[in-house]
Image (cartoon, rainbow, N blue to C red; front, side):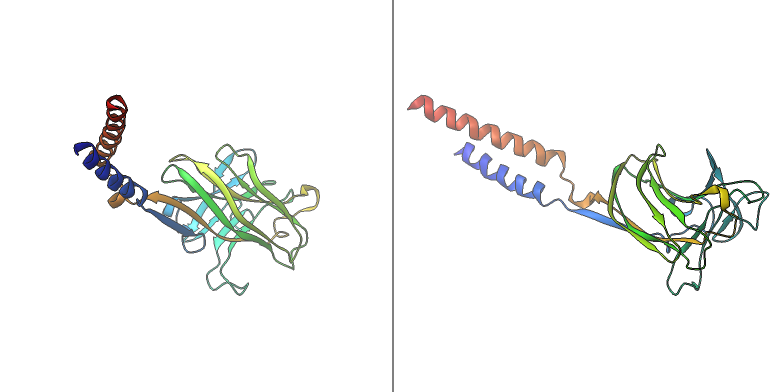
Amino acid sequence: MKSTRKFQLAIAALGFLSTASVNATVIDLYQSFPAHQGDNGFYVYGWNGSMQPLNNPADYTFNRPGDQWSNPNVFKEIGSWLGSPWIFMGPAGTLSNLGPSDAVLAYQAPIAATYRLDGAFYLYPQSLNGAYAMILDNQYAPIWQSYLSPGGEVVFDNVNISLNAGDRLYYLTDAYNNMGFSEYDDWTNLRGTITYSAPDPASVPEPAAISLLVSGMLGLLLSRRNRRTQA
């Protein structure tokens, strides 16, 4: 009888464990774009062999020290002239005052989880040349990449990356062909979301529930063994 009771309690505990829920967090890149470095876990860089933090001369606006009004420029397009919310990410080519540099938006993971990336890159039709768009992992290795033609939009859906707390992922635009690019040629834009899930603390089972489950299963096994011995 005791073994049966333990088994029933174990089944109840197993049901409790199976219903533990998770909370999905969805981050909109445009809505969460930082006014200053580090806001909402976002950072803005120029990449020319290493990550160089960009200046922050005004809210939601970032550009390169010593090359303030040339690319790379990364900023939130408030009242977007494209007709929908985008983040402008203009890379610099070889004719820029300080040479080529990619435009980078980085996100720092708050917890260890798998992060799903969805969105699109868009190159304004009046851009003089094509550009290149990439998403990099914490080690700067590409996990997604595509060429952009002027007027073209390239969508990325369900791009998954596993990150530890403190790791970063990077959205990057590149002038692609440095031989013929000035700082004004590549009007590249980004939009998208980052989604990750974390367990709901209210639904995480207490250690007592786990002990109950183990105890009940052991009781069931012992009961079956005793019946076989008696037979």
